[in-house]
Length: 404
Image (cartoon, rainbow, N blue to C red; front, side, top):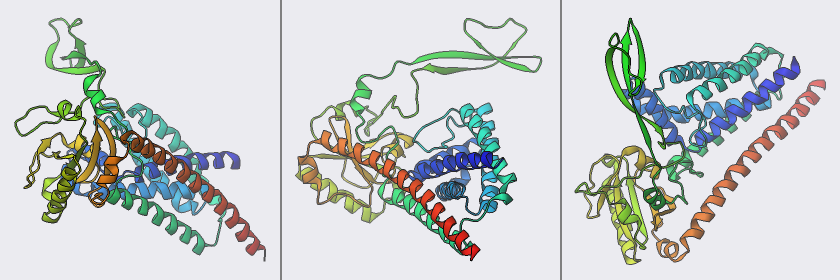
């Protein structure tokens, strides 16, 4: 039984750690997912808590995963894990049945599971956590209570620091479809083929059923509604199936802009009301520097509102704007339809634009990809290494002192 409980402890620990860490890399994306759930349950008036809730959730999952892997404070964290997985299991069961949200966001934007896949994953995880919870009193401490508290606070501070950096300076790893290296011009010139099907909903004796145009029921059924569904070629996670930019006259200009050889900078605005006068002055300064170096600068609005600036305005939908840049007022550099680099509104490269434009843009994107992959791999390896080393050393010191 000890072997089984340790296997369950390690499996649950790894899942919670990965889930929390990947969410922490993109807390704004996590907040967007929480907003989707709130709207699905008609609780959109709670949208203001989405970002704090996303931060709290990723911190709780990460520290719970660490605690499970270390075998630290198991009475506390097995209870917390059971509460979390019970809630998520019920939520994903509802999502699997009614599909209010296409993806639960369990692992952020890093990789996606269908609602049914997520539910079955949670069932397995629930069983593992439940066994650990039942056996929680059999786990021995790995250190003195004070040191276990210190470990907990240090890991909490670490993951909170990661989330704050991601909010201020953009995620270190971009899991969105609009990451550096994405060729938007290719998307526009070779859009995926889409296949649609219209389904008709009829009812009979309290039963509702869907029918296709080639398989309509007899007259004993009563018509309720119809819906056109995307069968294939639609929005797949991690892929762009459409990219729309409109100018003030409602003209589609994305392909025309992206086809030019000139370097282009886009300021991405999700919420124009939160862009103050100071930020407007910084944007104007950036536009001037870009023009001096032969580049164009546009503002892309995701909420349909304008900024009081003498800069061309373009419009897209809110979710696309948020995927292009998580920072409200963030900067995106593009060349020949390729997304080259991104910056948050807090670190505009005022003094580096000339150097950036002089470098090969494909080399910049390649470096961005390599750096992101190295960061993810090295960070996870260091975290896991430190977890098991600290667990081993702490237990040896603890039991050595206890024998004395």
